Image 1 (cartoon, rainbow over the protein chains, first blue to last red):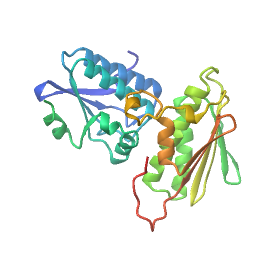
Image 2 (image 1 turned 135 degrees about the vertical axis):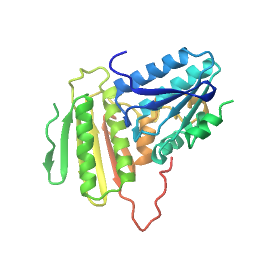
Image 3 (image 1 turned 180 degrees about the vertical axis):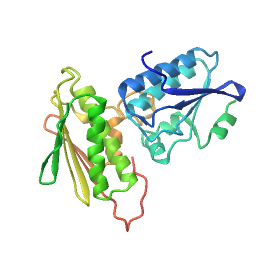
Image 4 (image 1 turned 90 degrees about the horizontal axis):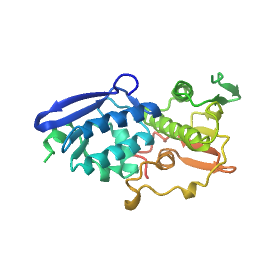
Length: 119
Length: 153
């Protein structure tokens, strides 16, 4: 993988892997590809991944980033894991609503609510 | 290298190649013009998102078979009432009505095809011209007397 990590990864209670983004703007195609590969590796390393992606630091994201999230969701589901999204800025949340991806992803306001939602 | 914006009356033209640095610089030029015309943060978010999607569509799809040095032309004008943004690529064009609707249940998991939908949702109007290689987007600044709502899909 080229360059340094674009993610901050931490372990939460219950084996939940929490991922945060280094970049405020998730727009660059090469960065988005790297993010997809890094999260993909985290998913691959788990039996039944419990993955939490926080958008706390994110100001902008592109449709290409949405595509990567969908791919991650498919990988998690293939391993009968669970994926949660949280801390999404209201303007970015509109992007999820417009594209109806708020129906595909389980989205929570806060990290704590998202962590508590894992079964 | 993209050239400094050429200003003709209130229209600026930028020729840019597919480099993140150049695209960021062009987007910042547009955002600064919006700032000068006192557009609020929600308006800047909307215009930036649509501009990013339009530029990336031009390079990713329009210039798919062209060398990365082939430039895309950005023309923009910002007045106190509206911003007009035009992106023209040198590709073969396309029919926007041929892009699948990703909001349909059966298409919800397609990994691409949301760029145009977002452009249409966040801008006041989006028109594809010529052979589909030129898009003109208009953003009308919301009237402060009207309640500000979220864009509608």
